Image (cartoon, rainbow, N blue to C red; front, side, top):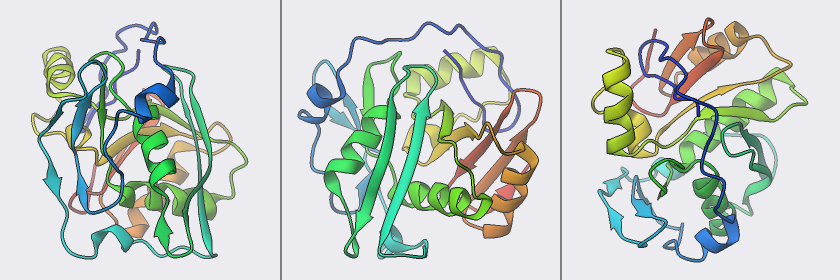
Length: 214
């Protein structure tokens, strides 16, 4: 498995991930994806939700995008799962698509799914649209449970204790056909959150927290 980082590169901790989950089975156990509550972690095994994060009014529609639909294409390199489809249409986010994205971005080590902030998907869609890539984003790290984040902190002092990965607001990605620096510079110009550039580890960190870069 690969773990990303909020401030500097963390060492890889093994490629073997948990592959025994069927996305359809997990999504049936998740709460509805509509509304403004995000950052809710749900155990795949128990279905118990914890630690909600409430977004401010109107935040779910914050990122303007051209067209009547919004698409996103992701490939999780740890689980080899993919999503390629419409997540927003007719002026609204599609709950079924958001649930699938939450599952794809789950902490597969802790077997937990988190309700992601949909503004992150808007940011990814804007970046992908702007660079004109033909490839899906390769996901290095999505959601990290508190336990997984603590493990990452033990391996690297650069991992933030209150990482946005633990809130469903961050992702570490790359595009095979696009230079990392180009992704980083473009994302920084959008002023939509945090952007971390990790050329040695081969990914860019994006989040929808405060605007900052490193």
